[in-house]
Each structure stands twice: as C-alpha cells, then as structure tokens.
Image (cartoon, rainbow, N blue to C red):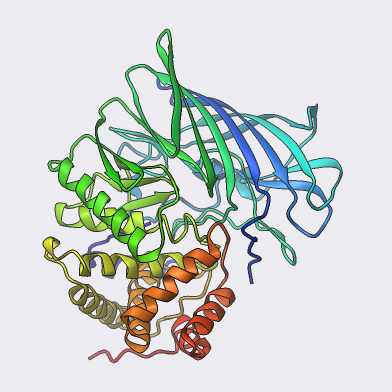
Length: 490
C-alpha cells in the first residue's frame, strides 16, 4: 500500500497519543470456493465459503483458525481501521459500522460448533473433531452475512465504488513454533499474512453495476435484475473485487497479460493505462515474468494512495494528479513483492514495502518521460527523512528509527511511513551503491525466482542476499533494520 500525507500535518499527527516458515514450490495448496450475492439497497452480502484446507505443517491439527477481517470495522472492534487524522476521509458521511456474521460452519459436511477469539470476534476457531495429520485435507464450509460500512477503505462502499477487499474468512498462516498467527487488524500499513491458494468465486450483483475482479472472468450470465460473474484465480495470496455503477474501462496488453483499467473521474485514462503497461513490462523484464493472465487497475474510493491485491490494485480517486502515476507504478510493483513473493506484513512490513518503494524508483529511473528520475526520488527521500527526524525530535526528544518491528509498535502513521517507506528506499539505494546496479538486479531476479509463491522472513532475506552477493550483509541489514544507522540532521 502507498500512503501519502502532507507534511503540514506532521505537527498534529506526531503528538504522542496514547522466523517465518516458507513453503516449497511443489507444496500442495488449499482451495477456496466463494459464492456471494450483493444487495446494494442494504449494502449487505450473503455469502458461502468452502475451503479445502491442506495441512502443510509437520503437526496434527485439531482445529483451524480463520481471520474475520470485516469485524475490524464493527462498533465492538478494539481500535480503528484508520488513524484519527484520516477519520473524516475514511468516513465522509460520519462513522459507519460493518462486519461479518457467521451463521453456520460445517466440517466435511457435518455441522459443527465454532468459537470466536479476540475483540469483536476477528478470529474464528473451527474445531475439527478429529486429528488432521500432515498432508491430509479437510473441507470446511462457512455461511455468513457481510455488512459493508460507508467507508472509503479496503472493505466498504463510498460515493463511487463498493470495495470488497479482505472480505471473506481466510485461514490464518500456521507456523511450526507459533501455531496459527492471529495478529490483529490495525490502522498502520497492511496487517495481512496469508498463504498461496487457488480460488473460485461466483459474484451476483445488480445489473447496473460493473465488476473489476482479481482473476479470470470465465463466465457472466444475467438472471432478472442480477448479473453473476464467475472468476477463478490460481496460486494467489488472496482475492478481491470492486463494483461500481460509474465505471468506464480501457484494455491494454503487456506480453501475454491483459491489463484492464477501470475509472470514473480520471481525466487522462489512456495515460494511466499506459503507465500500468509500462510498469508491468519493466518489472517483468527486471525481476521475472508476471505469472498471471490479467491485471486490473481500479480507480476507487480509498483513504490512502493505493492498495495492492494479487491481480488487482486500488488507486485512490483522492490523489493529486502528479501522484497518480507514481501510485500506479508502486502498487503494480507489489505484484512481485507481496503478491508472488510474500511475507508477514504485520511483523516484517519492510520486506515488501521498502523493496516495492525501491522498485518504483528504478521504474522512474528508466522512464524519464515522467519528469521524475531515480536520483530525484532518492534525494527527496533523504530530505523528507531528515525533516521527519528533525520535527519528531523537537516534539518527542527521541525517535525510534528501527524498521524491524510489528505494525502495532509504530506509535504514529508518520513514524511507520518514514521508517518503512522512506528509510527503506534509502537502505536499498545504499545497498545498490555497495553492490552495483547489475549485481542488485541480478539478485532480485534470483530472489523472485527462488521464493515465488512462498513467504520470506527477514532471516531468509538477509541470508539469500548475502549468499548471492558474495558478501556478508548481516551487519548491513542489522544496522538499518534496527535503527543503528544515524542521519545527520542540521
């Protein structure tokens, strides 16, 4: 996700207020089947999700845990999905609540009891009634109702779009030493962590809407006042879709990939589509081929600059014109870093966000027609970071510049943005200077190829870069990630 905030707000915002296990490339993966009907009168949806879950752990499991992210939007939630400063942008018509109500759960066809954990029932525990041994599969069916908040967010409806991001029960990642990872939804960053799976979705919605979806549209049919679109998406981390009765669309091509641009207020839609095509071409050439047959770029109601999902990216309609191309390029870079090569975005956000920001700078360095070159971006990052340190120290006297910490440990949004995005891009530029342009691009290609469809930890990342560079980079990364590198602030 790309966040933008004006520095004039820094004084307000900064006032104090209150190792992952990867999977092998030949690992069997779980399957999700989702059937959903959207009611635009009540802004609700009736849905049914079937998961054929494969136990890829080394342990026998007696229960499965699911994230219920929509309940983070409920009135009972502990905390908010947005910061206080962003509340008006998120809820322009006043605070609105949403959530997910589970009605039935079955295991291998038999109804079962289920339990909720965490505040606002954001974690669902499904007891199996038996031991699921390694490599065995269980079929879990969940029936539920969604209530969408009137919110310009990943999940919610706004003036122009209805956003279905992180809307369905998704199995928590299981780690051998920790068990199921149940970190909460927080306002900072992208608090998500998931495994690759295969998906089939059947979405029914009123006829006056157009759908942008993160997969291959294999069938569309009409039934009275409703359209049903069925799409599939294999080997992805999650799925999403966006509905609007205002969409126009354009279609382009990047090698064998169809690129769709959905918009309603963009004054230069062809230019935006061209940026998406150029970005997909550049990252494919630089890091490895984009592995899917389609990508949707979608203008939408969203509080932040943009948001990445596999095969679909959100671009906020609230962006100023000069930022629009930058966010498109940034979110598309996430198709490589997060989409294909994943990581725990809650506890190790730097892995995908810092690398994505660096990749975006490389894109503009190779596309001078945008009037924004690589050195300008790096110089700007250095200036912004020093300004952040100067202001923060005046207010708080101390500043935590570490990057390797959980999202909940960043006290403010500027602290998160400046350490993960801004400090992150400076770190990778410093590494590029140390290794050379050709070497770092070669390592990134190998990194993408080696860890495709896996989750990478900080330990794995550092070890891989050290091995491929022929240099022990442990101290380099330790100094940056743990805040030991000092910036001289005048």
